[in-house]
Amino acid sequence: MEHGYRAVLIAGPTASGKSAFAIELAKRLKGVIINADSMQLYREMRIVSARPSLEDEALAAHRLYGVLPASHACSTGEWLGYARQEIERARGSGFLPILVGGTGLYFKALCEGFAEIPSIRPELREKCRGLAEEGGLEAVREALLEKDPVAAESLQDLQRLTRALEVVEGTGRTLLQWQQDGNGEPVVPVHECARIVLEPPRSWLHQRIALRSDLMLSDEGIAEIEALLALKLPDTLPAMRAIGVKEVDAYLRGEVSLAATVERLTVATRQYAKRQETWFRNQMSDWTRMDPSVLNSAEMADAFWELS
Image (cartoon, rainbow, N blue to C red; front, side, top):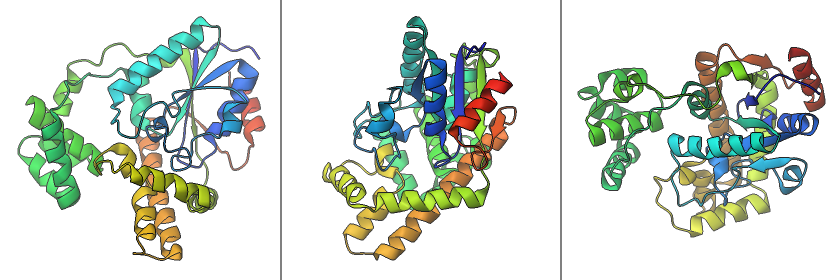
């Protein structure tokens, strides 16, 4: 296949078949698959994060999967630095970078540039995240109202609200002020890449999410989460907030039944997928849409070729 792109970006909600599509494209286009999912960075979490299997990784070159310990909190800016290196390395070797994941902010930073915010003091970060854990979304929103009313009124996600609080408390400037200072040059300008969002119907996606919940509660899935919990990491770390960790922990403690745990996992994953879809709809409205419920990976690769 010939094409005119310097990169391919594939986004989509969890369980939508992004990895299989990326592998098919990588085989046809001499591509290197680069992870753009915040949870799949952590090495202890292959099943929890639905990272590609070892068999899948053998089908095409994969980068930035399982490269960080769960004890590390990777920021968007840090990921962007890693991604830039892998993109340059792939191109230098004559390969096409194919970035795949469900973390919308990563793609936004990649295509629009990113304002590098100074590091926040660990003690302040812990204070803000402690407030989030104890008081929830409304407590963080109330703390933000005076110092960053724009973020307090516009953000609906607890993690993003907490980040806004950390930034304004730690730097004296709001997230919006940092962003308005200029984001720098994009790593992948939009005119150089193909941008695709997988957009399956809700019922189809829910069936796949149910299968993923079953896998997380398999012997291998439970063993993975037990090993992660044995590290006794702070609850504020991104890895410890991954869907499945607290749900399976409660099951292992005997606090909930297996059936209730399945339900909790399924509901939490559906809610996460819905938040992803909202982001893609609002922030990536000009990306090409593909429906993986009507096209398999090979057919989507054929459709991509026709688009290019």
